[in-house]
Length: 252
Picture 1 (cartoon, helix red, strand yellow):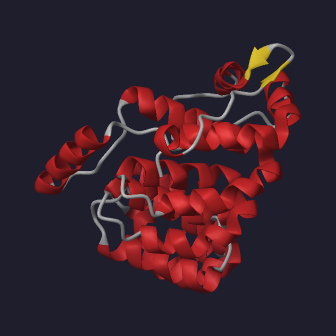
Picture 2: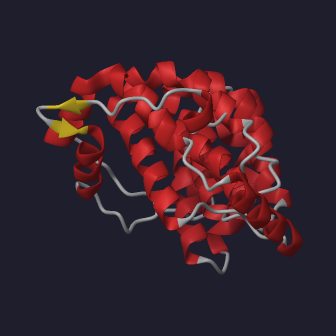
């Protein structure tokens, strides 16, 4: 799917004379951009209000932003290099910025972003790894309203590209639906894939709460592991999943 060649470029919507992307830039400035899981404002802000006023009219433009990627030949070359080096694929800085803004836009819309989910599911199957990464990122920001994306995300946690795997797992945790299939898949991913950033998977499992009790045995060893971030997220996850097991393991 290539927006510029297969369909007209959607017009960028605006509110109070200010373009959507300008509101998205303001929205990004309102939270800590340096944390692993930055917290967005708990209360409504002017930029979020503006994005919500634009509403579903923002979705076509946000989808175009989410699909931002390098030209085909450059993308093929990069993916071949990544395959040879067994490395992950990541968008260029400019593309990543655009994709992050799209994800923030979907988050700001909240449940109003649900109509975008079918299109984002399609992007999860895109031939470009950067686009699959972007789709997973956007779905993670939409959260529970994107539960119909769970089957596609479960497929993508086995994607050959590390960043697609990781953000698909993050999205499963943020959506926290279909625990009977998602929790075993995430637990297995944590057990067999040492290349992943484990804290992301640990946090995703924690988001399922008591529905992730089967994951307790694999999470408990992280409490005393060498990685401080993993220890922190395992502590929080166990408290969410099984407070009694957490207490027994010495978690305070």
